[in-house]
Image (cartoon, rainbow, N blue to C red):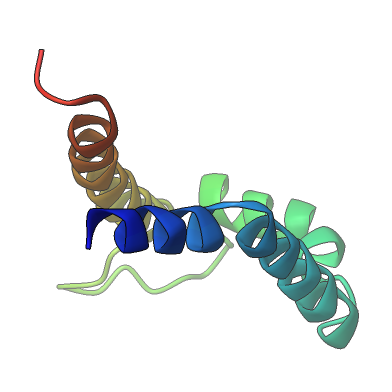
Length: 93
């Protein structure tokens, strides 16, 4: 059973996953016509310099606050998964 899990682990986290992720990234870049490159500076400008005339109504959050909330959630999940992975691979101590 342990040997089978080891083989499965190697198949999933080895070269095939790397190739799959790279191919998926290339596919999405082509299909979305490089949106992550075309709108990079526009999105940074929106995040750090609010547009003139934006309504600052009650309950609204800025683009920057929205970005920071998304990053905090992403980094938090990454830290939890990273620690769990490190403990699984390396063991305690």
